[in-house]
Image (cartoon, rainbow, N blue to C red):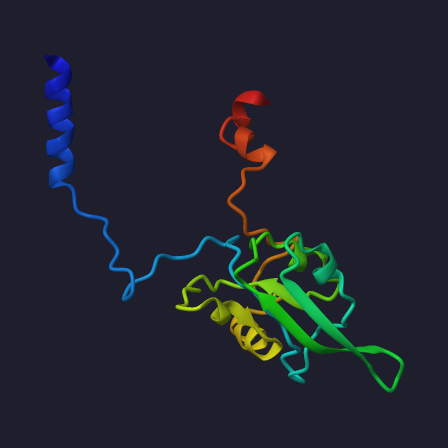
Length: 168
């Protein structure tokens, strides 16, 4: 019988507590710093040109083959990115494409509202991905890096931080 009273007390306590409901379309929850949304292309903020050097590593490492690249040879003998297509319906949002990019031209954005009525709406071109990437902060200005890690993962030091005076 005591268990029923404890359960009823918990119910009354929760009934008096304020609600934590978020009205979604008007109010959005803050994103986790390591959230991986839609992959986006970055461009140089000064010149506006794409940072992509058309190496094709992102398309090769993608486990679902959702990235397609068309490379155009330039007059100087280099490669230029002609067409870049992302099929978001096939994308796993794993982030391998952004990790392997040697010039940080592709990044995982904070874009998560991807619902469409037809599957053809999930195909993104180079210009659409560049406009999404322009909204993302530049990685060297966002405070992410080896000097300023923004992560929720505990380090080995975190376990001993509070008990350091007892250990030494």
